[in-house]
Image (cartoon, rainbow, N blue to C red):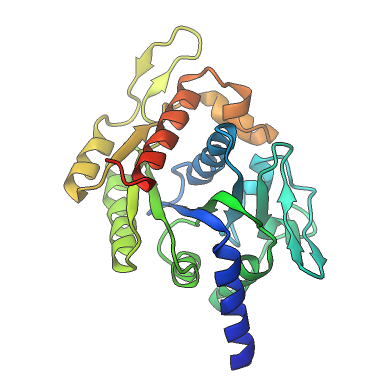
Length: 273
């Protein structure tokens, strides 16, 4: 790409992002912690509160957002003004590399520069419009996609870091926190996912993993603990069916936890404690 084109793309990203009030990245130090499920349900939680929301699936080779939102058959379309994102029935605008493949089973086999190029294209060309929140689902770790997002978005509002109550996850999540700090991203807080099993029938709670891990790492790293999301087998079932959990089970403990977390994120972004 020529220097003039690079400058034009950078200016276009700045213009698109200037119409979005809050840009929140959702990241984790490792895979298997339910980060994408958290990102999707956070987007829906903000939407349920009346906000205009977008969701960017920045996990280029491991995309899962289309499946979680039952949008696997959607495609992106070019117009004179840019690329039209997919959209949920609730009006959430969504962009994902999954919309560019022939099927869910088609792998994307790309090296770093191609991933970074697609992220720039999503940021500069997707017609996001005026949004209150853009939730950005990053892949696990601190590689190409997280670095591209951190460098390309001029004013990220902050990072939400997802962990589970296991010793390994707590150790690895420190890398994500340090990554965000090195790149001058504010850390909104940590979410402990799969935090104890709550029986959907009787309401009894059982700590399947170690308990207290979220509080410990939040205290050690001096970052807020946004909340604990209970382990509920219906979450996986909802994801497999493409029906977001928070819509299918609005009165569950999991859904209540998400809404409480959203309120804490709101307070943080407003300057609250």
